[in-house]
Length: 383
Image 1 (cartoon, one colour):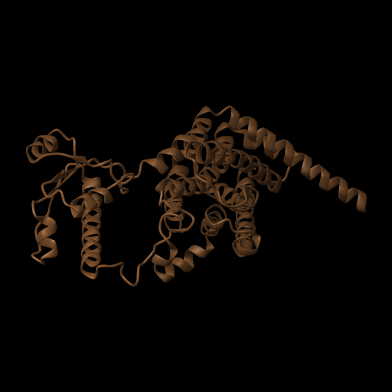
Image 2 (tube, one colour; image 1 turned 45 degrees about the horizontal axis):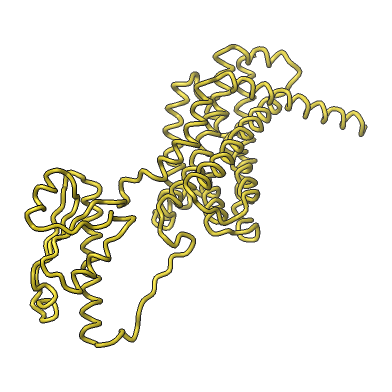
């Protein structure tokens, strides 16, 4: 009894292996998919990390300092890279021509006698000229300049009137990203998002590609089961995504963008494998519902957007309504984002992330069984 069962199991594994190799060769012959994989894990990650319009970065600013006092110099010194380019000190007649030519997004005008009037409590005016044609920088930067200027003035006045350092001083320390670099967060989050997106696309497209080419009928006459077909698509497409994600983390994130990874990549990719087990099953389930690639693409839009926006990568889950938080606990991406942030950002170990690992395993097994049942029904209708 033991030997026949062992032989049947080995045959099951061998058939699954050969079917997976076939999937890899089919993907190799699909240039569009290959270009998509290379693009999202290279240019896509780099662009998402560096091109953030809502983030102030190297905004050109000039200062008309008619006061030339310690306070005005203190304000000028507070406006520094990377939020602003080094401030240019200009005269009043240069302001309008410079803004007309697009040389400056902001021009700060400090009037004469500014420090004297501030210390005397006269509330002098200070002018901030903004080029509003650069909408994103103008909106974010104007608020940042106002906050910086008022903070410097308040601290200067407090020190001057007290004659000494205040008894209490608030010291801010940012953990895991001391310089508050948006590329550190954006690049790693995009890698997590692309892992989810590509796994669904590749597994679903693999099934639809066989249906369109008529090779599903060939599989039906072979001594293989629906479980072997699904497992072959799962392991082969997961392998492609894992290798692409590893290359992106190594060469783009850590190499080009110089983003440090705090935790163990081995532990992260163990969580990635669990997530891929769930998302590839999801992609196959969607492919059984769609008749062709355009329909599959429409389903992708309906599924991917909520998964990425509500999983905690773009917006903290704590900021969402309670009912949304509870619903998204059933999504594998919610627990994968938790794993990615804990390991890559904070250097967490298995003792910290074991719970989302467990949830990913349960969700993956459930999605695989549902997809397998749907896949068997689809194949029985085609037979």
